[in-house]
Length: 250
Image 1 (cartoon, one colour):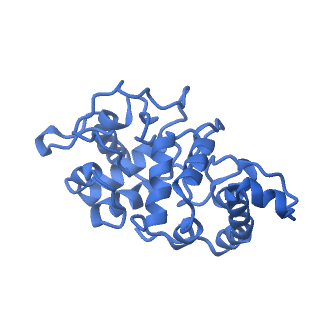
Image 2: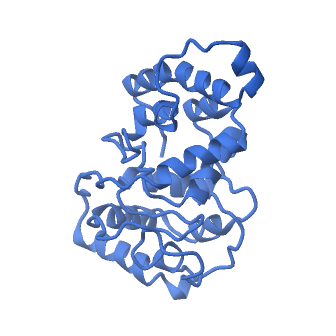
Image 3: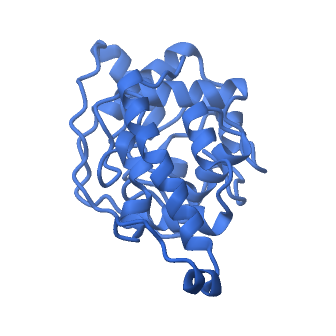
């Protein structure tokens, strides 16, 4: 479940870091300082320009990329995206390029980034077909739609919504993600390299899953077609299977 950034992708992202930080500094400057010092930045001062450090890996509009480990950001709930940005900045999620990129950005700036990607509506990426047999997909489907009552495992839809497109404000959609990415994140939750700020809801579920369960549900989720409506379910419309009322880096 090791997560590595392709060298070429990392270099592309690194080229945008200087621009990203420059815009962050520029946007936080006071009005009086702006009047006294003329900026030499020639690129448009817009959020779309500032997030180019993100789009180098996650796609122009956050739609995801061909890399297994650069997930789709577009259309996910803003609260969820904000929680993840904070988690990377504060070290609760560990991935050096992200940790470095976000290290000195304030909450207000991270919220602006989250709001931008949450509003993007772009097609889902075409994912490779999972190389697993029908029995594995059947197990994944059972866990995804029904869970396993005998082992006290709730279904994916019980928290992530009936269409698996997430629930506002902070539960993410699970569609349009590569099986290797899903498996890696489940493993990270299990082994503590992806840690929530307050709630341990996801970890409570993942520790009940076997390696075969994780492989199966990851394959099944990645095999699902793009939804007709990719919007997350409204806040309060899904009664969660577990008590996870607080913001959760799921």
